[in-house]
Length: 236
Image 1 (cartoon, helix red, strand yellow):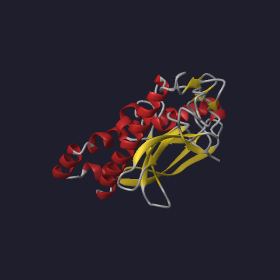
Image 2 (cartoon, one colour; image 1 turned 60 degrees about the horizontal axis):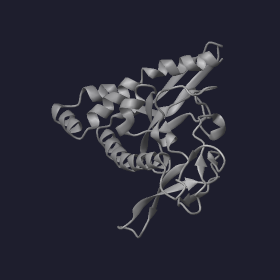
Image 3 (cartoon, rainbow, N blue to C red; image 1 turned 135 degrees about the vertical axis):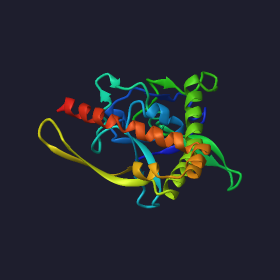
Image 4 (cartoon, rainbow, N blue to C red; image 1 turned 60 degrees about the vertical axis):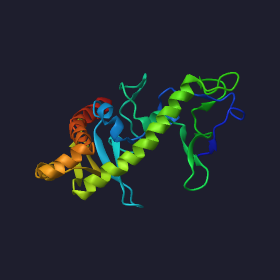
């Protein structure tokens, strides 16, 4: 369950957020949504695939953190074992809200008061003693703004991939060191064969729109599947 409310410095003057990374705070997730603006950082650590929303048929890029539901292979006894955490995960328990009438709506900061990260006794304070924003809250606001812009960038990026038929589903079968056979399915990746035969005008347009670099970041990230399997084997 979740309880999203508008953040304010009266009702939440004593609010603190636990920033420790742990399964007990909801970090035991198989993947996190990601956005082209952070692909450079994501591809340094995680494979990037795409997930299709069955309700809308829209595709969303995701950073793979595990090989099965409820598994984050980057979580250890000392926290998160990577230099970069996907923004969609780092911003929790905050999220973007909207106020105002259609056409004149503006973004505001909401907080999930049912999140295990919410506390009044430990963690990062959200507001200063006299009501101003702490540096922590300013960073969260910047992350949420990046997510808002990134969601629109995602829509344009995915639209270009779909337009040129560059997404394909895949199945990856793995045999782990304990002899168990595992399958990763239900995700999509970029079809390199179709990318290779795009003509110059299309490639030029993709480059001009900033999509070509994002495509190559996705392809470069796939080398981390080997590391993900190594992390899985290390836990068996």
